[in-house]
Length: 160
Image (cartoon, rainbow, N blue to C red; front, side):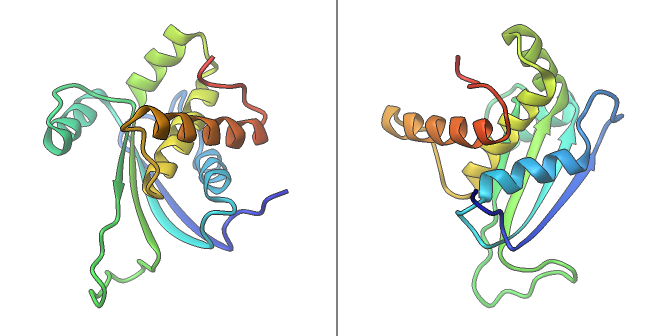
């Protein structure tokens, strides 16, 4: 069994009522699974948002005027920069997950809601590590890795 990071600090913030949204403990477990064997220490934040905030962030950072399921913001900290109190390295980055989009997609795709949250959390965490799906080969590699991580969590292939 692959062990997770030796030090993992995942801060989870909810910008909307938590009804139907997984607990911070679940998000931490999914991030740990995604990072297992890939990074020894990590500090990251997850923010669960509504469609309005998700759309505004996607428009501002990606130029796309709609709410998307997950946005990944890898940390880009220059060497020698002093971090705010309580923030330690390695600062991995931030994930923003749009709850209404996740719920809609899970329903449309016939997936369990928690399984879809797990998949998007793993997907976003892999983006923070530098994985991408810009071309077909990279997409296939990333999707296979996601399948393996999710299978380890007892979650079916999200791409079926």
